Image 1 (cartoon, helix red, strand yellow):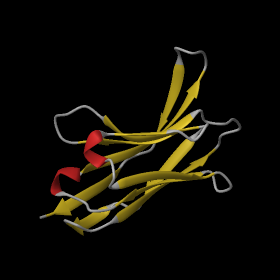
Image 2 (cartoon, one colour):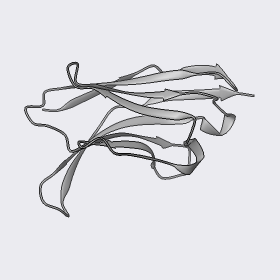
Image 3 (cartoon, one colour):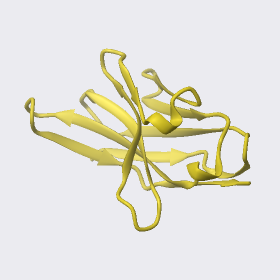
Image 4 (cartoon, helix red, strand yellow):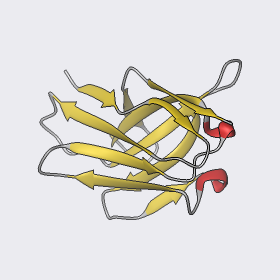
Length: 120
């Protein structure tokens, strides 16, 4: 059973930084992609950043240049470094791991979510 456990959320002032962590356990296979999503009340969960096995990354336009996704394979943990935080970054952040079964079918695993609040 795959488990993803996030940590690092909290309250920070605008312009500040936070680093989110996601520790994976229970996996005997490699994830094809790992990432972070955010969700605000009344909205769907949206992509913040992803990191593919080959090393390529993808970021939401609103966080480019401010957020960085990285991975420590030895610890089976990945991170989201968030700098220059803005009040509009306030959300619940979820870490994600994806395993492709075929080119068009995959399984997603999710963490429980960690809340980030950015005060103005």
